[in-house]
Amino acid sequence: MRPDLAELTVLGTFVEIDLARNGAGAGLVGINCLQKIVLPTLPTLYGALLAGVDYVLVGAGIPLEIPAALAALVEHRPASLSIEVAGDENGGAQTFFDPALIGVAASAGTLSLPYFLPIISSVSLAQVLLKRAKGPVDGFIVEAPTAGGHNAPPRGAPQFDELGQPVYGARDEVDLEKLRGLGRPFWLAGRRGRPGELAAAQALGATGIQVGTAFAFCRESGLDPALRDAVLAHVANGGIHVRTDPRASPTGFPFKVVELPGTLAEQSVYDERDRICNLGFLRAAYRRPNGQIGFRCPAEPITTYLAKGGSPEETAGRKCLCNGLLANVSLGDTSSTGQSEPPILTAGDDLECLRLWITPGHTEYSATDVLRSLGAL
Image (cartoon, rainbow, N blue to C red; front, side, top):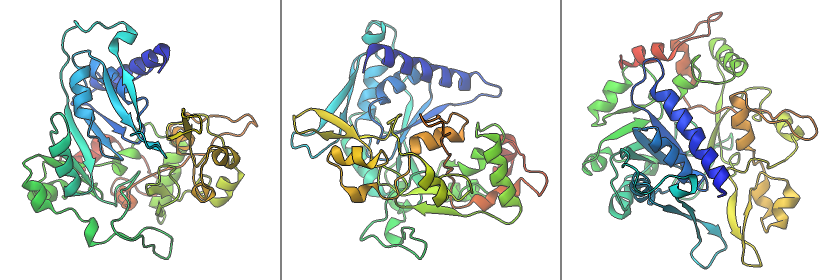
């Protein structure tokens, strides 16, 4: 990474964490990274560490190297992470970050090491992390397939329901008794946004719960107000479906999509969008014929993807999450043709939990309302 880009990434993350730490009623602050997005991770984590982040969460993969990277960065030492390279027989590649790139000396005072909580969907993954990670694993976020965003694929041969959604079964349920036996705290996620869920999770041995959907649509979340109001109006007046789309995400992971008209969930909106790849967060590395590393995404223009050695079947139904998710928070790009990027909303299966805080004609609520309902205040 170029030094100026590394510096900007560090600065941007520092500002986000610092604002959260010093906001009204601020408490502990965490940052959630995706293992699938490797290239910006190290300067992102370093900026968070400089700002005093309390927790680091990483999902969408097996984050074995994150503990060692954190241990190096809190001492202002260089750190590296592996990059999976498709079709590579040489063991992939690595990305590096050295705080000296942005003028920080290794002799600077040691930063506080945050708690590291990988996001898992199985006890076997928790066991692998505890055994092989080169550094402390302080606990786990246990995400059920009902949680929003990306979901782990079902175990076993793929099966789909009448709506084309992946079918999850008993093999996808986490054995909480075995998890308790690992001796680490854990938090349960997925359909946990209702009163009583915190106490129920604690009765199962969990330290607490992770709640996403209820906070995603509160007025402080940063979601575009027009999108938020549209979803809440649908919920208040009869409901709206959340589809587990096996094709939407370029990562290949199932992805929860709120079927709101006017967004990428609507086939006509998807068909009308120009396929562009101008952000590239979810691009995957591959080995070019000349031996160099290239990057490609099955949601980019199809001819471009095929020219990079990608297969045509991988492009079907893929949606640009990079642009779509930024559009959710009013940061959507405008293409060269003048088109505004359409949003793509995600939520957990229990979108109906929002009825707890809204009524027809009154569809605004606060994060404090949610915390009180959950018994966390």
